[in-house]
Amino acid sequence: MDDANPAAHAPAPDLSARLIVDRDALARNFQTLRKLAGGAETGASIKADAYGLGAAALAPRLAREGCRTFFTATPEEGAELRRVLGGGEADIWVLNGYHRPQRALYVENRLGVVLNQAHELAAFAQEPTGACALHLDTGMNRLGFSPRQTEELIGAPGVLDDLDLRIIMSHLACSEDPAHPMNAAQRARFMALAERLPTARLSLANTGGVMLGAEYHFDLVRPGIGLYGATASLTRPHPFEPVVRLEAPVLQVRALKAGDTIGYGASFTAEREMIAATAAAGYGDGLPRALSGKGFARIGGQRAPILGRVSMDLVVLDVTGCEAKARAGAPAVFLGADLTGTARDADTLPYELLTGLSQRPARLYEGAP
Ligand SMILES: *Cc1c(COP(=O)(O)O)cnc(C)c1O
Image (cartoon, rainbow, N blue to C red; front, top):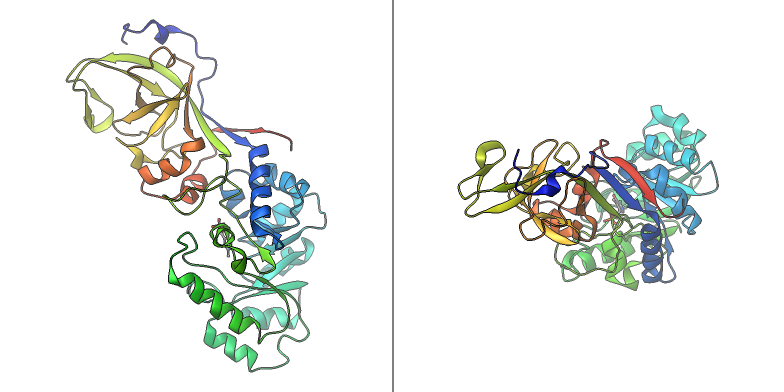
């Protein structure tokens, strides 16, 4: 225990990190995407529990903002979404395909089925559960009918005739880079195939696709990450507002002398006198260990760089020069407007950072439900 800073003895009002999610910012991001999408309908990708931020707390607000089409990865997520939307008329699509043993989940929750391959289509067509969509693979090589399999489908008339086919979709591999030739190539492949299939609404764009411009919008766009305040690009500016911040209270403040080390592995050595604050967040909360010695929090708006290793429950910050603000109990703020920079520092993407947030920090939702 070091007595250099009297603030170290101030009582901490709360010792635990909390995750604060701003629903008004989410709503504004949805409206921004809507404007960008022009005449296309703007749906919402809300898979992985709304990218880790809590679908139950966010989906109803999106619905109130006028969102009526949602995309989940799994039928379980779709069923949970139907529940939190209180039933309702929203269209919920399950991206990961059709698995016959889960038929009841699709039926009971009125989940739209995205068909990704021939055997899913065959199983679905035997006993349809309701509406379906067709996913064409135009270059991602992940999910969907390959161009050759799509040709087979086109060459087998009647297969799609009795189905309630609502959407023909594909997914862009490089939409965060407007200069990438994959974008135009995928768009051209998508259009060439779709026009030979039965008429349905067309959907190609995720957040990056929405930002590529009108020729990528078609009838329905499916943004996810933009709603939550980021894009897939670590370098390009974007119009989305921060939605989430992690607030970790400072637990202890200490003065260091030259030669003192910090944390596991003694990986940081002070070269001069400095003030360090220990805050209550670590990789157990989803603050990546890759931020060890990189990245920063903000305390009272000022940058406090991470010193040494991020541990499970704690992280040490350099608060030299902002000691007055870095009192015990003061929140050290991670993510927020620094989400993309933090992802870059951790050698990852905002997507992984958000979905990696753990359930330990209490979630606090600001703004109207
Ligand atoms: C996740 C996903 C989206 C949303 O992508 P963002 O980059 O988060 O906007 C759209 N479509 C499909 C098929 C997806 O898997």
